[in-house]
Length: 315
Image (cartoon, rainbow, N blue to C red; front, top):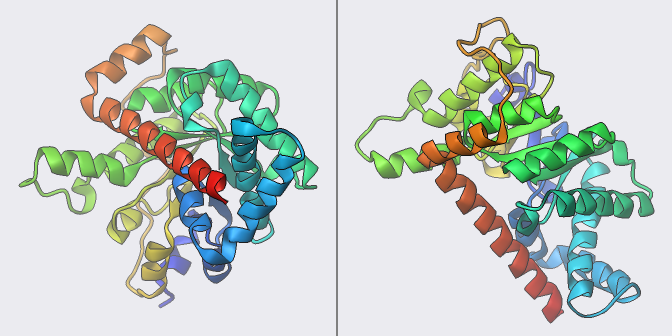
């Protein structure tokens, strides 16, 4: 029997959740995705510091002060993305600054700035997914960008309202955060058994997947933020799964069977209806887990973006 990673790849597109080029080469995923936290981890490694120096040198010829550091951070994300594109045949996701999560126009402008930087590097911008936090403002930015031909990855998905709004906006892909949903429920109910298909993050992704397939939304569902390999096996058959190097290695070292768990033919219980801004905000307010984790995720990515800029400022 083949290893579990190879089995998974038969019916799910595997994406590497890392900016580590060595890991990409080892596991040979179809796509790669990054975020400020992963870029920070990458640049903290000595072998990748030359990319930071290159970004700073380039930015110094363009502007100065804090604007230079912000521009250097964008350039660094693009340099890492460009190298990832050389290693994977598919898409690379590059994230918009989380501090813009509640500003639609600024998000749109930043997306185009990132694509211009990719274009200046000679990269194929059709292989870049612009990654945006799934606030109402971020989803509306994605609506505009998708109409402009820019494909988007809506991230930090924790609620059905977010998933629905993203699909209705025509988002190319969404990233539900499986493990962070589990974290919240384990903290609230520490004695509860959340193993296997009782995992609330797994249940959420299945619900979204079946809803999208039943009602023929083309938006891709990509499970993310896994805490263990069982969550991954429970979602075998999902459109895409973005997986950390540690869990990729665990799957590659395991040989038990990985049957397909998600099937497009399973009907969803919900029927579609256009979600207004007021309905979206109310449903998010009623969902404490989703509200907590979305806010926490934005704060974390913003903090790591600031740490990254502080490193660049100190070089």
